[in-house]
Length: 119
Image 1: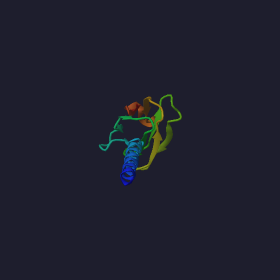
Image 2 (image 1 turned 60 degrees about the vertical axis):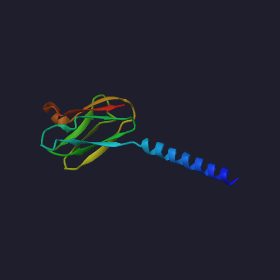
Image 3 (image 1 turned 45 degrees about the horizontal axis):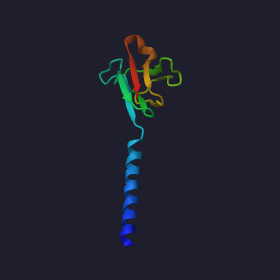
Image 4 (image 1 turned 180 degrees about the vertical axis):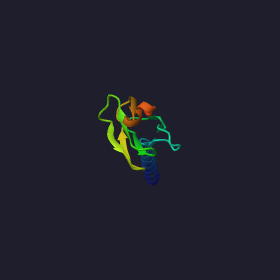
């Protein structure tokens, strides 16, 4: 009887351990994109990120403000307000797989464009 209880307890522990690992590996992540490079260039750094559905991108104002991020054809993802202060940020979550091109309105002509690929 005691060995059956030990076996049952061991099986329960193993189940909860597997369940906990599965949950922790399924958690969403957040990647950071700087608005303006550390070298002072008018570019997103990095300019292309690849994430999974449910993950987020945190846009952080870095250098040569003002900046924003406007997504072509996706007003719901766009942040049209200009970030002026260093460190000013916002986070956008991407729920649907696809390729999302974005740009900085004031600096699009200077080539400040980027891309989020969601798997």
